[in-house]
Amino acid sequence: MNKQGIADVVHAKIGGTKVQAEQAVDAMVDSIVSTLKKGDEVSIAGLGIFSVKARAARQARNPRTGEAISVPAMKVPKFRAAKALKDAVK
Image (cartoon, rainbow, N blue to C red; front, side, top):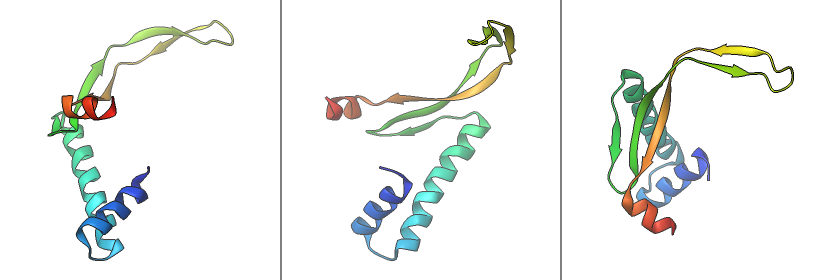
């Protein structure tokens, strides 16, 4: 399922227009992204927790040439699934 599929499900559940459903999905995604940019975490009951993890700088190797390259430190998004989600997928 992609973003459009989620918008279709939202449209089927709450009615209104498809444009309004797409706007609702876009607003939810935008709010999650902006919260993660601030460094905060987003917790959705029954789904999980979105957070930001700091990854340290490290040395890596180019698999083709074997040359050592430097990978800079960066922040990466992380998702921890809630117990309800884990149980539903089993």
